Length: 344
Ligand SMILES: C[S@@+](CC[C@H](N)C(=O)[O-])C[C@H]1O[C@@H](n2cnc3c(N)ncnc32)[C@H](O)[C@@H]1O
Image (cartoon, rainbow, N blue to C red; front, side):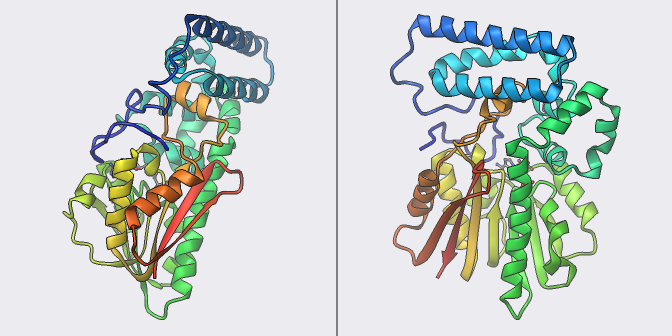
């Protein structure tokens, strides 16, 4: 299972805070470091030459993404930690950073990884049209690739799945339903919900720690049952919000930043807010993803990757002997895993 600091659930995760499981075991030899650095130099220098000679940017990014994935997988975490800044300082970034999505992720204008504006690059939302139009031709071509990388496809599937889940739950209730999105970002899934459009939602609470995202949700969903509130994992766990109980509570794009201890506490808390017969769903990026190396280097966006067993274990630790049913499954391309806990 993923290990790490016991984040307090409020401090935002920045690179360097995420620790991989085997950090302290079987420390690597210096030969391994030399080998990894040599392989990296060959791959990045080739990448640079190819950009300079006008090779198809999709082919370049595809190859370097796979190379970085293999390096991350094959070498010890300590070696990988030395590789990351070398990639980030390499002249090839002059080309790769022309992609406005990669550049936004690397720069972190909001001070933390994975903000909702970054997700809008994945959703292809109109909010980012100006930035894409202002990019260079090469930047737009790279974005064409990164927006359709497996991780991006999986995040769009996640948004669609959440909207369908809300609709499905609403269709099984005679009364209007109540929903809570934890770490809602811009709550883009709500625009896809038929139940919201048809007035079958009583309230859809969108909680996020970022006041800019709370402001965007307030603006975009004015006059609907969506209520945006400022709050964090910490304020939620401490019971500061009086939200009552709801039919469906979910968290997407959040557990990837939470160490196991906090993940279990948050799961317990969210389940307390679920009505009998309702459910809590959380998603997490999977260890099966092959874009981990690109994300951690060029995007400076490390995540706590989990397995289906890790998700099951968070759910079991959070529920103990409670009367619940737990389902764990992977999305279509396996990059994102889901766990839904239904209160019986
Ligand atoms: C990757 S985005 C996901 C947004 C949205 N759920 C989606 O799937 O598009 C992560 C969101 O989590 C929020 N977030 C990060 N840490 C948080 C915390 N400790 N408490 C509440 N929100 C948090 C960020 O502000 C950001 O909006």
